[in-house]
Image 1 (cartoon, helix red, strand yellow):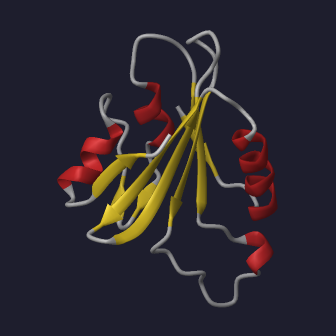
Image 2 (cartoon, helix red, strand yellow):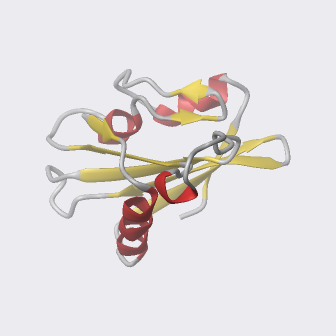
Length: 123
């Protein structure tokens, strides 16, 4: 449904709040033996509320001339409503290890697997 660019310190504030919640899942994205990404979801209590997603691309380097306080590897997205795969919608437009995820309506992880990456559910 939506993604937005936010400052690094705001992302880390969201992540701290996110980690304190119980209705979450987390995935590790691997290329061979190297971790190239992390994806985290926070699920709404009622099923229709706002699902929040964070994805980190560990292959992405900080561009030259950018203040480290303004830059982060973490990406943020969300989705609300019923009747579709909110996880795929929330990560649509995010990039992990060179793969830009599409909001194609089903199984966000399948897109990474098709690119030769391994997706492991950690939580």
